[in-house]
Image (tube, rainbow, N blue to C red; front, side):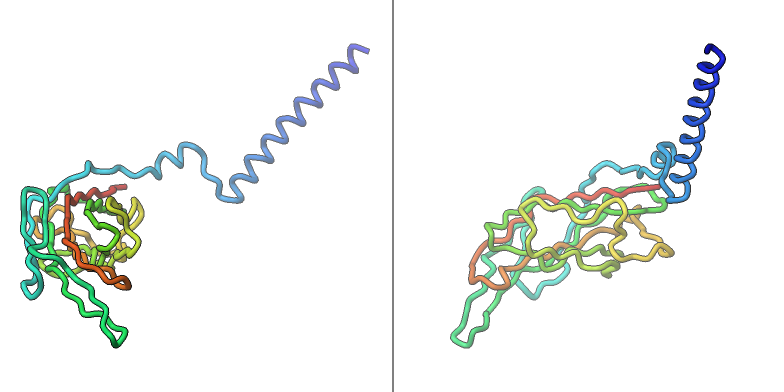
Length: 203
């Protein structure tokens, strides 16, 4: 009886070991990463940084005035409906925010955090990375953006292909912010850009 009991225990242990080996093989076959691999995939975020320079990039529309970290339109932007079912619009100048002071390196993603007072009537027109006064990325315009909105993520290069360098360390690198009156609702409101910050992710 004792011999039979010991033999049963040995068989049970062998079955457990075999089940564990099969499970490991199945994880490997389906590409399931082990915890150590997942840690290697974590990105290193920079701190949120504010621009050290900002300027209007056109002068043909309503002027934007700087008050500390705030940029405020000199007068209200407007979207007025006409009897022809169209809108007569007046918009404010775009502002580019530059020189965030990042370290150079391979960039896997970029986030931009915009704080604006929208009053449910001010919408995005252009949210776009810029370098040497030229747009270099896709437009992250979000017509449903809230007063505080974050664009991008740790794996989002804003449409810039992986074989191209993103010169985040340059004083000429930054982001264009251009807000507009609502595209479908008549309105007359002041544009308030309260703050803009950026952070980048490194591998």
